[in-house]
Image (tube, rainbow, N blue to C red):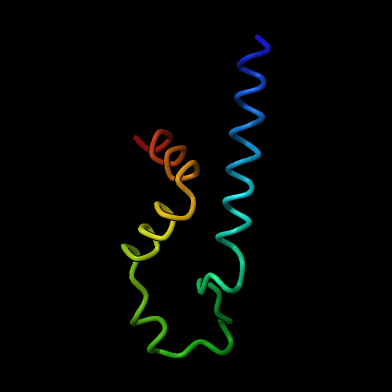
Length: 69
């Protein structure tokens, strides 16, 4: 079905774009395991990361939610 193929391609492209945006250093989720400080590890909150994904990558979040539900 051409419509399903088009939708798959569009969603794949958007999810890839969102992952690329989330992976940028300026998004603040990068740190070096060699240079990591205890405060960085202690200050990490998975809820904060989830909120960032919801806000900055809603298509990816929806995909993950449907796959994990």
